[in-house]
Length: 398
Image (cartoon, rainbow, N blue to C red; front, side, top):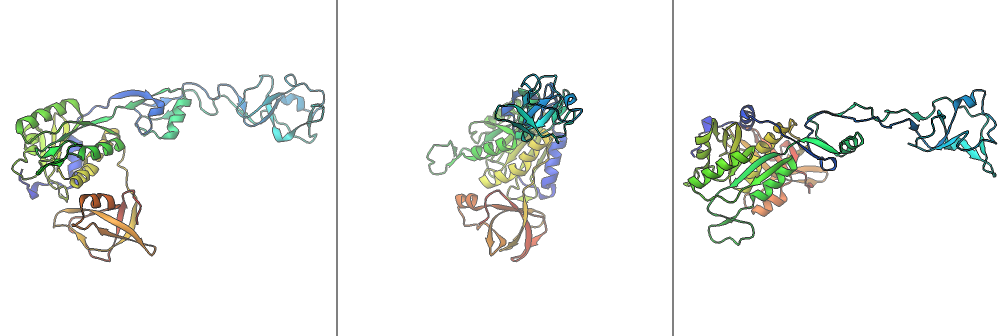
């Protein structure tokens, strides 16, 4: 499909256009609370009961009756455990007739095992007593719907009586790899062939972002076969991602097939790499055609699919850490386009430097060495020696 620069959208415009037209309903599923980390709550969760269920001791010691100390510390030499006092360690329940705690460090026993207390000890009614519901009250809101659950949340929900968590069902993203030249993983490619590996990379990223990939077999460059695959994917998934065939090649008709089915369609974004992206809404669902090369596919998924996933869950897109760096080479793009630059950042005498990956680098070198990123705005050019705030990709700067 021919690229029309005048009709191309910015990355922000493309994402907002899809979000505005996407018609979805969040499904709810219940999962064991121990498996709910990283999931989003589908409903408010309240405590099912008080914790503690009854009042308990706040620390180690003994439980006594405050009334026995109304006139000061009594003679405890003849006191009997279980009658005049009771052991009460941290979190322990104790008999109802006792109403205050004396800390273990204030408690002593003589050689005969008789209780001995300092005559100057002050004993106040209710001392060190944790009331019922002090930790968690019945009906208390634990977490609101839309909360992204972390490790601590699992413990709180379980303590509040939630053995299973009501969470938003995972977003399903159908992935259609296209191209007659592709062969499955494990196949030794022959001349003119390439191994289909983007599903491995993108599937792992989708899982990190909270989505589930529905991976399809390789679809050859055949309009009818691809049309059938697209229709099937639309029926089975929430978002459809067609990989490959988005540009101007003789067999690049994938975006055309999306356009034929779409209620809304746009082709191309003002960013490189990844310019020839097909954007469609079909039956209320986003359907996207991204370029086949690995890096272009990753960059497109990183801002577009990730943005859709976060929108579905009602979560902000996580922002990477930005740090200032000195650029060691010029950076910019053709007029009107963002340049999505993958960089190698390294420490030089305590100052962070960054440089673009050389065009001569192999794919493995490119993927292995990139540890930073910079989106150079359209119309902006950096010269060597300029400073810029770069995003760290999570690998260590050398």
